[in-house]
Image: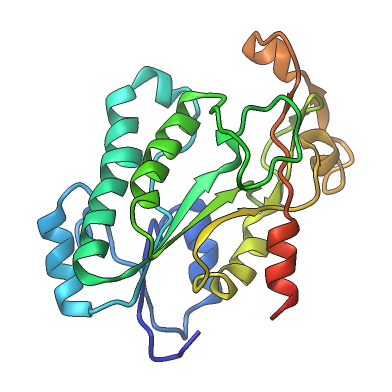
Length: 240
């Protein structure tokens, strides 16, 4: 990335945002507060953009956990994850700013696993529907990149982990190290680590972590496998 380029990162006070900030203190990356860059106000964002003249916006802000909030407060989920993203797309279009959007592996159906970027989508929960709603707006703007992510905190924060839920978890710190290598790409990229159950992932960090069933916890009829093919990601990084 050209060192003269200016980046706005939304969600700097979030779990990933704090990790990303700690690694990029000396780069031209701006981490505005919610009042400085309010994604629910296009006028507010326009004023900030006019002052800072960014070349990129990395949109990491949004509503995630607890997952139940997307069922209990649908309006908040829609506002922060769909409407806010639509507003960002609008200001990026107006100013020809490259947009990088954080989506999620949860948009995949969870039936067969090893999903690639062109596979059909069917979100497994309301959180994923809200992120897919954001994707719909971003897809309309060709100067953009959608990252379907599977990442979590380090160390693993839970005492138990799902043994019947397969994904591609990687730690925030590991994705933070590669993010800037991807921002000039366009389209969609699956981003995560090795395909494995959440339990197997957590067990490597904490030998005492317990097992819990996703099916029983959420009352589902079958196991979930939203694991993604990360062939495209590996190929792009190998070229670096």
